[in-house]
Image (cartoon, rainbow, N blue to C red; front, side):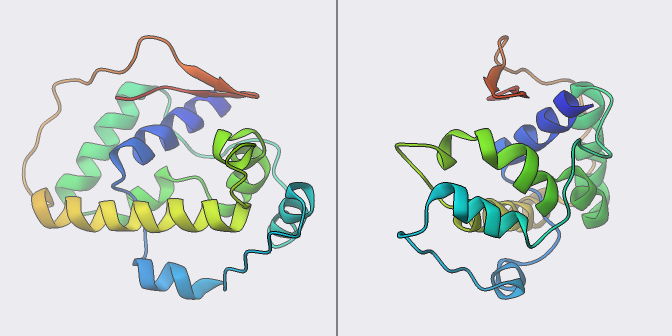
Length: 162
């Protein structure tokens, strides 16, 4: 299930069209404080302390095909709740995704707070654009194509670009 949930989030991030709240709401949920004097390990510990510990992903799609089909259905029906269920939550991000994500490691070293903020606001913005452009239209689903070889970050397997 871990692979499928990571597949799910990478497909969503690749499309950059998911999220449940506006960027303004996301930005006001929790103040972002970037402290370059704090080590990566300490920044991650602080971020994880704000959420519950998880060992695996929940929800998700059974396959990439069902993920894409669900994405199209949610877009056609403007179902923001369905999009929200497709995303990694803060706990999954903190304990499963961020620790091995390349952007959180040298040479980038983005803090977990900053990377979470960038991903959630990017998803919110993409979702708003997608809903404005094609929401409630009959789109259909004839298939998709992804790179034939996934990338790996620790235990996480990512399919894309798609």
